[in-house]
Length: 134
Image 1 (cartoon, one colour):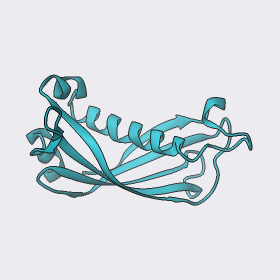
Image 2 (image 1 turned 180 degrees about the vertical axis):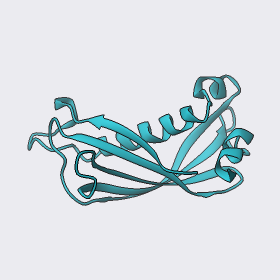
Image 3 (image 1 turned 30 degrees about the vertical axis):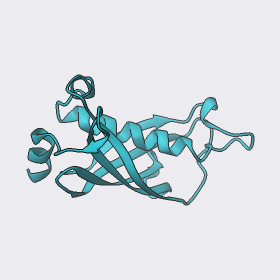
């Protein structure tokens, strides 16, 4: 699977008292990147939920490298680093869209496909596995 790119503008609500992006908000940006990546595969997460399936984040390893500020135009880069039977390891970063060498955050995120009623791992949907194999 190639990389997926999502532009994100930093709003005032994303910043802290120092005027920089509050650290936890980067996790929200990363979530949006993974969500939109899944959408590009033609998978509607609402349909997965109706089928009793969801993705749960099991692990996050994040490095904060530089602060982003109000009104910066960011780009969330998402790619699948590794696929298991029931999980995906994503490699993600948040960088400046206009200056891609300016990287704010790097992260490895493990998302597990679960049955919502049991909260137990289940096999990834075939469509996702097919896309990763392509």
